[in-house]
Length: 344
Image 1 (tube, rainbow, N blue to C red):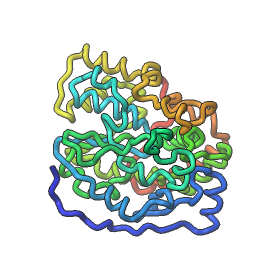
Image 2 (image 1 turned 90 degrees about the vertical axis):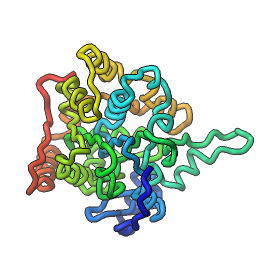
Image 3 (image 1 turned 180 degrees about the horizontal axis):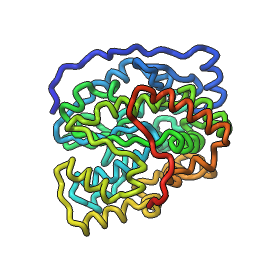
């Protein structure tokens, strides 16, 4: 168990301008208080997050036996988690038939994502007589025995500064256009976010880095610059879609596991998107009866396709978005694949 002393949070939590907050509150019903900025490139949390909560995330206990998955939102996080958990647990498919959160994974930054006023409104605390179920606990217990599996959407600059020195971390990146489309649907589906506008408006928010846990390109650049660290396995969503078996072998080697071709084939079949989206242990369908997801706005596990952005971006939007991404990536050697000739 990590016995390092707590480290003060090196960043201040800064509210956005009043007019911006009002606009966010109007267009994202799940964020009635708007957002706040925290770190040197403006990572966004719910405006109701406290400095203590962020400092707790920053000091999350570490153990060399723990495995982390770090991604921006909607970069195949759940997909990656299922792959990593099964590889680390020697392909225990029976053990995987348990609720994803918090039984198998902790969601580190969940307190920074949810607006506390919105939570009270749609998921009040469980009552003593059991009349109210309350919101499901997906944060997990940071002090439970290792090995622990931790999911974080925080960038490395907001995760525990000793993370890569202590734990194995699998990072998944994705091309920003498909990320944007996927996040648009997610923000409409989840009532804790409840985006009320159309796709064009969402892209505008996205490009202004005014969506939850943005900016995403800076998030990926920060990880990309650390990709040679021996405790970091950097993956691209598009590589998983193109050749999942190769990526499975890459992660298995990283985690010190050796599987037969037959075992790799079986895991690839388990993770194939058509099977994955119908897996009740990962697809979060249980949130719909609880009233936490809209029943008529799609599913938590959606299409899983590279290049779906072409069905949403107009030529004008595409040109503007390309220039925005190019400006963000200036001075880096990070590039993204936007289309695939063939994908699983």
